[in-house]
Length: 184
Ligand SMILES: [Fe+2]
Ligand SMILES: [Fe+2]
Image (cartoon, rainbow, N blue to C red):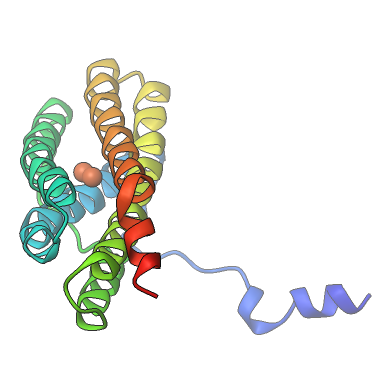
């Protein structure tokens, strides 16, 4: 009984759509593509600072490599928009803005060295997981919509993001977290 009344609180009320709301799955798909291209472009700009602030040479290299990979992912998305006949103008991605802001505060709150490196890995993995979730959904939407060429391109990026995530995990487990803990 109690539960029902809680669910009816003002915060759980149904939301009225904006006049510009997506009318179907295809429109939602394109909207989410605009979100991820914004996110990838923001990353291309933000990653060099992450790399410059990393001390461990393997971590620095992994991030630098991912800058090139990310630039290529932007190009791949441009191709996706071309195939769909849509403009590739991005729309601000609040999630990526937030993740990047968190990364910035980690830099401000740590000295260069293993602890900052551990923080950079933590921030980067949150970003990778956001991308993995986004591309997983986008590839599934593309398949359902019968956009097979687009689905294959999105799947390719999804694999790259998973690989980047694994590399970051390896860097963390192999040495960085241990060094960071040894400094305690
Ligand atoms: Fe990416
Ligand atoms: Fe990525």
